[in-house]
Length: 296
Image 1: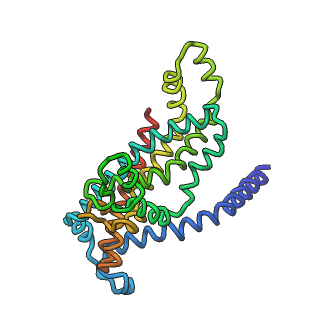
Image 2: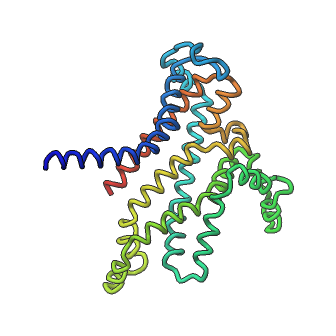
């Protein structure tokens, strides 16, 4: 009897391992191995054009070098500001739009959800090209609209003070629908009986959502918060297509700085050190955010 139970447990374990092995294999090959290789390169000096065996060991000097560079510190500051601006705008909007699309009796709300989600399906490069035309300072539609309203034209991507905000607006337009869909999915798991009981007790709209919706939506909001932070900290495409870090490095971000360091300057070790620093920052921020939401 005991042997039969052991064989059954062993058979189930092997079956589970068989189902998991393809996914685990892909994770190891396409995630774990590149991370370990990047960490190894970050401790060496050499270009992308030479074999790994010819790279010279330099230890942690690459990490010291990148933090001594003002341009990398500026890129880190810019990407933090970009991420923070997106969080401040997208998180409240996704909650409000999610509540509106889920609870309001709106005709064609499924169509509205689809329309909101569609920009997320468009490649970021294509979105950036279109918005580059919209931001065109002389004949762009946005400045034309401002002229109709008798407002001064804006520099948009050509202005030191407006370039980063222009990239934030682009990202909000493209990705907001994705996070709204996530919020709507979380709202579907909240029993309507809670709202009915609160209404019978005299709770108003604000009180019901403050005391019921937000606490029960905590896990969904934690997911949105973490994914939004990760996605914005690794921004690259719109910067590469539209600004290349200009004007005056006001839109230079960490991912773009990695790219030009590796492929324009041929310094693979420095670029890999930057990548490992960003990986550490993303991991720490994600763990802190998850811990924060668990304690609420």
